[in-house]
Image 1 (cartoon, rainbow, N blue to C red):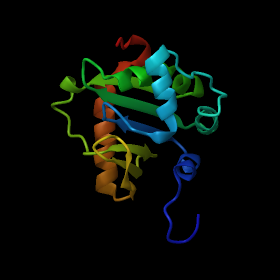
Image 2: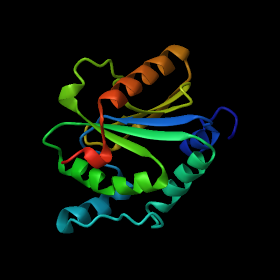
Image 3: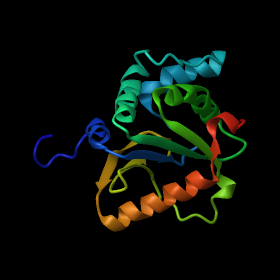
Image 4: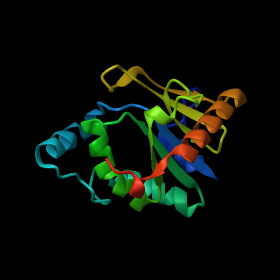
Length: 177
C-alpha cells in the first residue's frame, strides 16, 4: 500500500487474523460487474455457481485463503419480505460463498426493529477495522465508495450490530425464499 492510501479490500482480508464479517442491508445492489449475470438469471433462472468461474474465482480464493489461516468469515443479509428479485438472485448464488468457507445467514428486516444498526453496509475485520460501503439510491457504489474506520467506538458499534443480527438470523440452508 502506498503512503496516504487506504488499504484495498483484498489487503484488509489478507491482514485479518481472526474474523471477517459482512453485514448487508440493501434489497438490491446495482453492482456493474454482476449486471449481465443478473439479467441472465432473470431471463433463465440460471445462476453462475461455478467457484472457479472468472466471476467467482478471485473471491473464492480470497475467502479460502482466509479460512485456511483460521479466519472465521461470516455474512448476514438483512432483507425485506417478500424478497426482491435481487435477493432471490443472491440467495441462488450463496452456495458459492458457502463452498468458499463463509457462513451465511438471512434476517428478515421486520425482526431488526430492536437492533441498533449502522446506516451503511460494512465489513468488520478482527473487531477493529470497519470498512463501510456507500451506495447510491439505485444500488451502485456511490462516488464516495467506501469509508475505512478504526475508531474503537465505531468498531464496537459494528461488532454489536453484527453479533445481534447474527444471533437472530436464519442459516442459509434453512432460509426459504
